[in-house]
Length: 280
Image 1 (cartoon, one colour):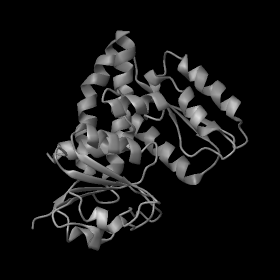
Image 2: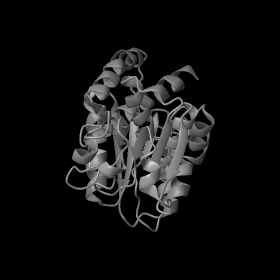
Image 3: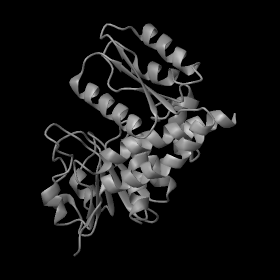
Image 4: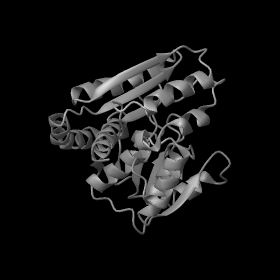
């Protein structure tokens, strides 16, 4: 059985190339797409992610506005920063880097972001719109997963998809997006009974559990499509890649799979939001 490597770097390049003319058109109208990123505290991984997103913006002609707040920032202080950005006409997208320090009400902060600027798909309203099929800005990793399937002409319709993980910005929204594409979806989680048996039935497996090499090769049905949305220390995904490769017909690597496409979808959503602001 031939294997298809789902190369996220290739997909990301195509997405970013498609943004060049759109960004030029905006700049001809004296509008530069702008993404504001808010980082609270000094988590090294979060700092790295914010830096990567900022670098991607700058490479593509998108302004990156970085706001770094101290760990002791209160929920109310964070809300004030978000509100200022909501009212800033030069800012088109707002990203609050997850996770925030434990004393902050993260859900309240997410929901304070204007839906017009919620380019990372974190608000409750944005999630609801995504689930109902008319969301403008789905969460970026779920959007990236769907873009990879589309790019490689892998149809979800009529397929059984098993999603492992139910986080509000990954597992739940990707389940909704797959359902909207007429897949039959099983969303699994820490309380799921007989997880390997459920995964063995799947035509499409999405691993989004945050545990290195969690999904085993013996769980994968021959010919299944395996999407690894995890990223753990040491550049390790949630899937045991070598073991699953033998069974899968198509698989994403880590790194170089869903990650680069996630950042590209963030850039695309920011450009979408800038265009929407111009036409208002």
